[in-house]
Amino acid sequence: MKGALAIGIDLGGSQVRVALVQTDGTVLRKEVEPTDVSGGPTVVLKQFARLIDRISASETSGEVSCVGIAAPGPLDSETGTILHIPTLPGWEEFPLRDVLARQLGLPVLLEGDAIAAAYGEWQFGAGRGLRNLVYVTVSTGIGGGAVVDGRLLRGRRGMAGHIGHIRLAQNGPRCSCGAAGCFEALAAGTALARRARQVIAETPSALPCISGAEIDARRVVEAARAGDSGALELIKHEAQYLGIGFTAVIHAYSPERVIMGGGVSQAFDLLEEGIHNVIQRNALPPFRDVRVVAAGLAENSGVIGAASLALRQEMAF
Ligand SMILES: [Zn+2]
Image 1 (cartoon, rainbow, N blue to C red):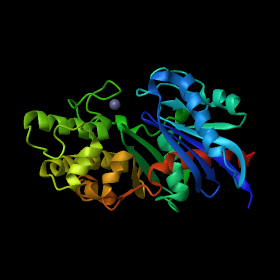
Image 2 (cartoon, rainbow, N blue to C red):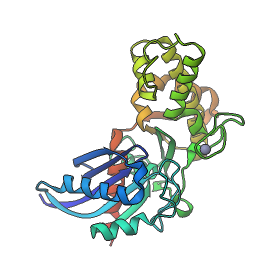
Image 3 (cartoon, rainbow, N blue to C red):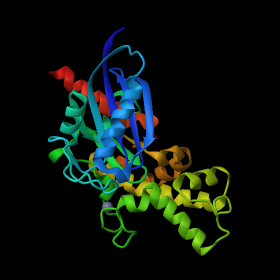
Image 4 (tube, rainbow, N blue to C red):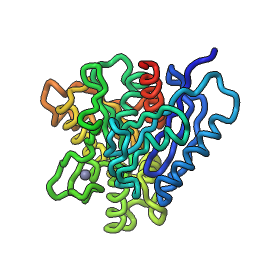
């Protein structure tokens, strides 16, 4: 059956993900590559073109009518302009939506990545049927997107949901934004890796499974799964920080559910109990029954959400 298709692009600080998406959220084809960070917009736009060629190469079951692109912010989704991305130098004030629309000859929608992912999870993932949810991505950084009263929350210039920069500690670790003690600086995957490095620096024998190897959040999780007691302790602390941040988010938005995505959510089964223990202890009593769940679309929430938002906009015209 012929149907409308959209291209979804998720521009991340470490990976570019491009997918061909149907109106029902099904991903027909997908390509992923490391982001050419040092090249800036010119090179990354060529990267988009190459990946789009690849997913469009074979015969499709419909016609591509639009493109939805999700990117880290802050970005202005009303004007389609990237404002500033700490992890991607050279993109300040870049009019990505219009440049890409000219390059591809298709209508383009630009959305904040966690807002797009919240929409994807709401329509096709772990948030189906809800009127209130918050999606939180926990990876290199922490971002958020919310559905409130049955509407996707965008806020002024489409910049709502920068929950990674809620300050949880006055004198905590330095954040990518320059402040200290942000939720992101305490609980993102990079923070988990930093704590692992600190533990090893203090006690070289503390994490036998990962000592000597390049330390990132994934290795800490692997070591925890292998039963390394030091890694399990790090995961316990990670769950506490996530629980504190999620409690703030639950108080602010009153969601029925919090949906956790991003690389660190691959350890959700190890984190779940600790996160809920903190919410049980710290949230005001009427908020304590709010559950945190793992993203239903895994790493595709952003591409599916961005493509679906673009299709929705096209259909409205
Ligand atoms: Zn910050």
